[in-house]
Length: 243
Image (cartoon, rainbow, N blue to C red; front, side):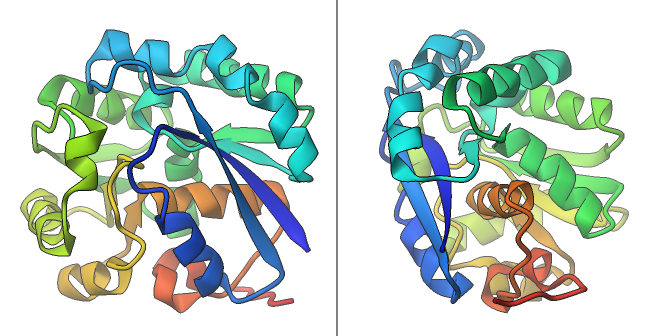
């Protein structure tokens, strides 16, 4: 059994995780630990407060007791808002506090984009424009070019959690660009686990979503590769090793 730990801010789309655990169809357990969200606002100062070392370290002991082999801070905006270097320092602090290999959803997007061979990407963000621009800047520092950025202007995680598959698809379509190798849909407050196959079929290219890449990143840290086609192209890369 491989146990993977996730620090998830508040309560929004956490039901994506048991759904993905089921779709992985192997000896993998996803352990979700909720962190204090503070002010629910897609605003730079609130997002920086969301991801402080103190908030993340407060759950370190619970992570250790869970038996997790790795931990991912399951929040895109609460990691990229610190910038490339700051996000690295954030996960280094989390690794020290938890005593485990650590990463964040933002780095999950970077590694996942590389995995599917995407160098140019379209961003379909629920965020306000200024926050979406910070994500594009983070990706640029990682060597990825955002050829299109669409911001929906959603100001809270609670609102993002209420979106259904049709709204997610509409946003992804609006953001897509002929030059984009993949479409990235940040925000772990957005339900996407059930929509990945539909999104990719509609757009004809890999679609990377926040909760999807978060789980994939944890598997990467644990050196596990699982073939789970219902979770999109990211989970069908070769070589496939299924235990």
